[in-house]
Amino acid sequence: MRNILTALAVVSLLSGGTAVHAGPPTALVSGGGTLFEFHSAFWMNLHHVLHEQARRNAVTKGANHWGPSYPVAPDAAALTEPQRKAWNEALDYYERAVVGRDLLFDSHLWWAKNVVSRHETDETLTDVDLAPGLRAALNLAAPVYRATAWPAHDAANRAWAAAQAVLLKAKGAAIAQDISATFVTPWPKDKVRVDLVAVANGDGAYTSTMPQLHAVVATQDPRDQGTRGLEILFHETSHGLIQGTQRALDRSAFDGRVVLGDLWHTVLFYSVGEIIKRHFKEHAPYAEVEKLYTGRWDGHLPLLTQHWKPYLDGKTTRQQAVDALVAHAIPPPPRAP
Ligand SMILES: [Zn+2]
Image (cartoon, rainbow, N blue to C red; front, top):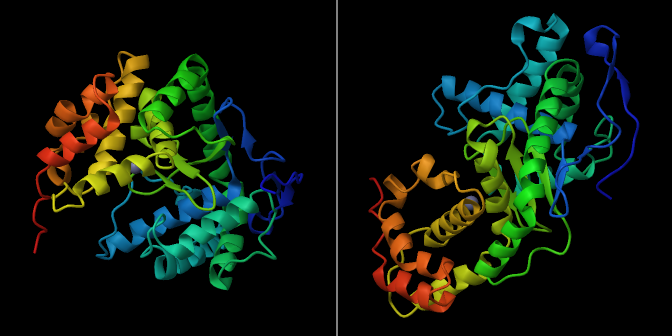
């Protein structure tokens, strides 16, 4: 269903009738091994590029939308006048209707992600279940993107997949096994779908778990390279494996304990970071490099080191570690007024 094999050779009206290849006949990219199914898909990339550029435009006008640190838009100076007009019209729509929505938590964008991934090799989005304005904006911007930034974005996605393939081949199975044992949850039966995109959200990656585990990873994000990119792959997948541990934390705290905000998420960050380090000694965990344990998650690192690490080292059970975490947790910092 997701891999419609359609040969694409598109004549772009907006590039003056020049024939350009839309890309390979499938968005599947090798490199994910037995664990992951990598896709470098045109519509998924276009959707995220428009979202990001429109977000930047909104921020220049005073909006407060957090996002990635690097630009990915087609080079404006290289666009013809009709291309610029079409691109800007699509951006205007995204700025008006899309950027105020969160790519992960907004139900419309969650839906849009699923729809465009099902139609990833369609030449145009015709009979698809998207809001008419969104569909029109994507179709309007598509020839411009195909003729400009897409080939380089696709190449970068494939290069990222090739780099990750080396790491996955060496240690992927062992890492998956350790993660599965840590969260006491089997690894997914099917390969986990990962869409490789030039740009994603402010976090550089996000994952929905319904109707199945489906991650989106930004291959040009400086934070997602090398073994930290590998950590992100396993981190995102672990969002589908953490629920039992999250429930154990909630249950342990139910009788009146205060649990640090997002403790389950730092348990996830810490566990996957430490497991990657177990297999790649030189690995510096993502949360430490990106200083996630200061500010919002202040106090989490000492707690995890003292009460969760013994479990990762095989010295306690998960329940003992959960109870110790909850017993020593401190309340989240008060919200800013
Ligand atoms: Zn996460």
